[in-house]
Amino acid sequence: MVLAPLADYTHAAFRTLVADYGGVGLFYTEMLNSRILAFGSAARDPYLLPGRGDRPLVAQVVGGDPDVVFRAVARLVSLGHFSAIDINMACTRGAIQRFGWGVSLMKDSFRAREILRAVRDAAAGLPLTVKIRSGWEHDLPELLRFVRLLEEEGASAIVLHPRSAREGFRRRARWEEIRAVVREVSIPVIGSGDVFSPEDARRMFLETGCAGVMIGRAALLRPWIFRDTEALLRNELPPGPPDPFSPLGRLADLMKEFLPEDMAFKRFRLYCFWYLQNFPFGFHYLKLIQKETDLNSMLKRLQGLLAGERFPAYPARPVMIR
Ligand SMILES: Cc1cc2nc3c(=O)[nH]c(=O)nc-3n(C[C@H](O)[C@H](O)[C@H](O)COP(=O)(O)O)c2cc1C
Image (tube, rainbow, N blue to C red):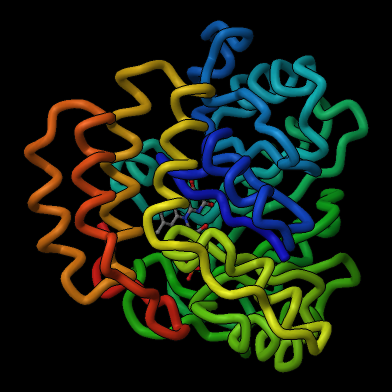
């Protein structure tokens, strides 16, 4: 079970929270901008901190210039706490695509190859994973050609979120493409997309033959979904969900520990957008707490609002994404 890279969310504090609940075999950082990494000061960067218990930890890099990516990866390796490097060829955000980074690399095999070589050269023997989408469009022969290229260039594993670049988060993730990639390459394939319950995770393993199941949005709603999935896979009963306020209280404490104060507040407020979607009146609660101007008053408000709440049964599917 793999915690997905989630920009703005999978920082050291959140990964530590998830690790405390258990059930995760591999953690990803949020995507790290190669330009900032290459030319910034890695030592004090809160984005690069390891959490507690969040190992093995993969650092995900996004970029499109092989020289810059080389420098960025060399810096990451020098920190000593990353177990592997991932290159993001999946992100569809406008600015990332305009730079020719993220999923744009799937349209440019030559550049993709150059980036992979740069990462491999800088990674000093650390494994290299690549996170991709289905491609620009759903074109299976083209996807299979691309994953063969990744394998040829020394990727140790592939993570596939089987939606096209155009789809963003619309339509369903096409798990059948995960199965096709599993059959095409001999390296491990990790599936990502639309796993909203432990049962979904088990179904993804069974239907696709993937080596790992990655969870993103549902882990924001229920950071303990990995523990519940582990229990299901062992035919055991999962422990019940925590009291609705306690994960937020714990996360706030971890954010105060790992992140600078203003970043902690901003990130906590962003996180509430997801977590509160567990509850029928979540968006109303979100509106109410937006008025608070510091973390402690926000927490106090949340404690009152969530006192009478309970978690509905899985699936933990957000109704809105940003
Ligand atoms: C808020 C958010 C941030 C994301 N950030 C990243 C990222 O930094 N790098 C990346 O490769 N994918 C990113 N993704 C994609 C997820 O890793 C994952 O592949 C996708 O959400 C599908 O999985 P899910 O259905 O379990 O959420 C992000 C997704 C969301 C919703």
